[in-house]
Amino acid sequence: MTMQLLSVFNTNLAPALANHLWQSTAFAALVALLMPLLRRNHAQVRYRLWMAASIKFLIPLSLLVELGGLLPKATTLTSQVAMYSVFDVAGQPFSEASMPAHLPLWMERMMTSLPMILVAIWICGVMAAVLVWLRRWGQVSALRRRAVVATGGRELAILRALEERMQMRGHVAMLHSNELMEPGIVGVMRPALLWPLRLSERLEEEHIEAIATHELMHVRRRDNLTAALHMLVEALFWFHPMVWWIERQMVKEREHACDEAVVGLGCKPGMYAEGLLTACRFCVESSLVCVAGISGGELRKRIVGIMSTRAARRVALGSRLLLAAATVMVIAVPIVFGQIDAGLRGSLPAMRPPAPPPPPPPPPGFFKMLAN
Image (cartoon, rainbow, N blue to C red; front, side, top):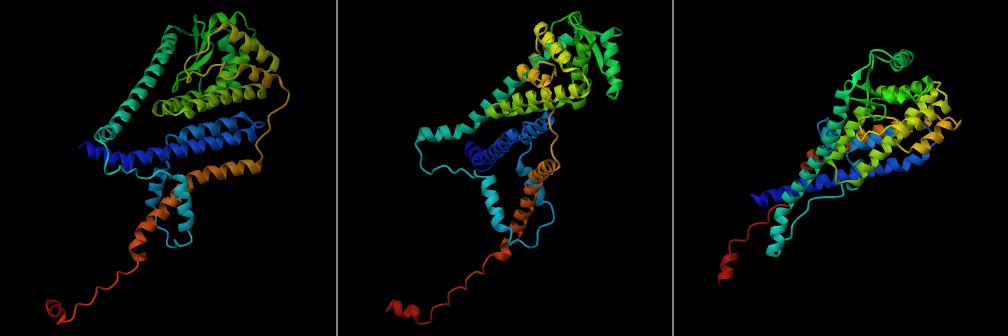
């Protein structure tokens, strides 16, 4: 039984996992190479690219290849085999791992138990990541339960006016809290704005308006949902350092994107920056990624960006078409290769050369001659 598990691990699981990690790492590295080219464009573009790199860890290209195999097979394959082979080797460099026939006894025992050890370590890492997130989420949930739903006050009036101005769908509940956690959006499906009451004493109405606009932009962009999705990626691939680096990039770009939106809606940069600094000095940052607050990212660079009069450039039409084409290719190329692969498998019997004819039987007197 153990040898069967080792055989399945070597022939299927290990190569598939290695190829998936290679493809996801290469895709994230490509996104990182694009970042310097987009540094003068809107942060929303960069955030979407990092989000795509995160989602790639959840979507193996082998699934798209299998989907392509279900489509109608290509009829002409001769001009596609060479290109398919090149991309197949580049996209899936890891193949079946075979174990040598003769190994020392201690090494054979270690190799047979290796798959179970690796699975056990992976499960322990997943459980540790989930427990950490649950502990932090429990702290935020406790803050939410102790908060009181706001029924009046200048903060609620400003929030409702902003919702009407921004044409938000529905209302975002405001929760007044006596804690010192920074203003933030809590909840994924039913987001609510958690607002520390003692912070209002230190802010003017323009400060509150700018901070509330920032939080409403998090709601409109569904940042808590995308952050929760990346938390799933981190739990499953906790051993990969790039997923944790992608989290930092996503948080940085999402806060830059909200800052650009707040200034774009007409808030005074000076009042907005002053409100952020006051809130960050007085409040404590949330420890949960999927609670979108105001102090994420590099605050100093954010303040410089807010106070800068240089507006971010829109992505040119050619660049947008190039990004759209690259997105389509990431999805379409594996499907096409899966179709080609299925066509090649189906045509192999026809392409195989005919078997040579059997040798003629020996003459009747052949065996007599041997006997003599």
